[in-house]
Length: 62
Image 1 (tube, helix red, strand yellow):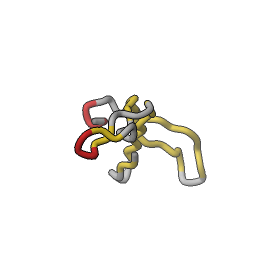
Image 2 (cartoon, rainbow, N blue to C red; image 1 turned 30 degrees about the horizontal axis):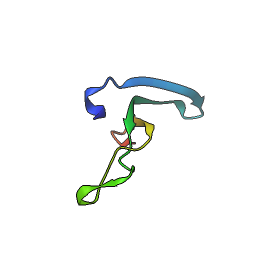
Image 3 (cartoon, rainbow, N blue to C red; image 1 turned 45 degrees about the horizontal axis):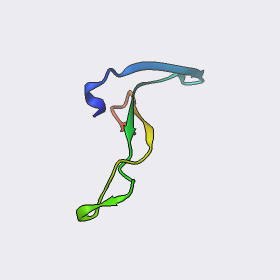
Image 4 (tube, rainbow, N blue to C red; image 1 turned 90 degrees about the vertical axis):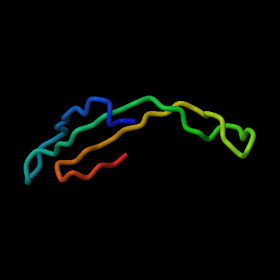
């Protein structure tokens, strides 16, 4: 879902090894943890922010 969104570079502070930076993308989502419906499926629950971090090493965290 985040792949289609713009990943923006963010520098949040400097350190002894240089600037701490990564690219981030965010999206508003509905978590599928609502009431149980037919065939044991969950209805959409509350809204939440999905935050993705793409580090310079290529590692991605969500």
